[in-house]
Amino acid sequence: MMSSTLADSASRSPSRLSDNPSKKRLCLQANAATIASTYRYPFVVEHDVIELKAEYDDYHRVYAALLSQSRLKMFDRPDRARAAAEFEALCREALPGLYPAWNVYHFGAGGLDRPQFGNKLKDALKALADKTRDKLILDHVNELSEQNVGDAGIDLVALYEWKDAAAAVPSVFCQCAAQQEGWPEKRFEASPWSLERFFNFFHKPATVLFIPICYRVPTGRWVGSDAHQSILIDRLRLTELLDRRLDGGDRTIADIVAVMAAPIELGAFLADQAQQQAA
Image 1 (cartoon, rainbow, N blue to C red):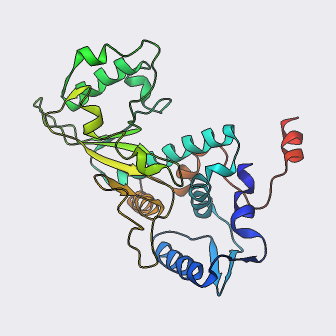
Image 2 (image 1 turned 90 degrees about the vertical axis):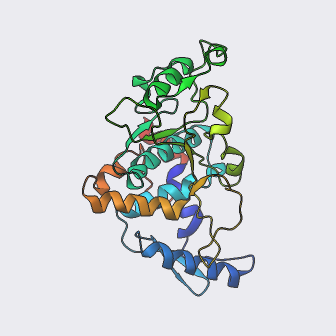
Image 3 (image 1 turned 90 degrees about the horizontal axis):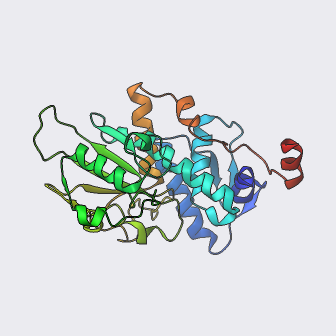
């Protein structure tokens, strides 16, 4: 279950680090020191032991959610779907921290703002083209099935919508990849190169790829260049953007926690307890 994530990952007291503990200790210490500058890191790392801090607040719940969303293989299918949806919701909360004067839309299938675009993909693409003021390749759009309610790889959209009616609307298309390993293959899903099948862009949108992992070596640099051709926002950058929202005063930490259906709490959550709650 999702609620067991912290217990499984880090909270057994104490949890020993294996597989080259010296290297892992450096990574954890670098991770904790970097994140502590922008967010409340819920762990204490000393020597080769990682433990949860005694206090556990809403900041920790957000970080714990991102941590669990980076390890979806641990969960069953319903929990994976819920966690992926919660990751999109957290990314939607974070994106205005990068584009504070822009309009942000949750365009993805089932997204908060999808009703204003239309449930069917062909309708949604037409409505999106109206907002970006781009022309559609209607022959290709009309090939889409009437039953297709997907999102063409676009989870979030950020636009600066000019007051005038001319073209060239600054735009960003985002993909939210709640995956530990397979995310590099998703970096082009929301890219103009993929979407030129449907759009004749006046100006190509930027591409942002959100991932819940902390994709860093101990120096703070990327592990590799897997995200080339996209603006990569990993767990570290995502929490920085959430902090910008909080600093701006338009969101509270309670608002951010509220977008999660089941925030993670401390301790293991056993199957028989789940059955008792359901009863």
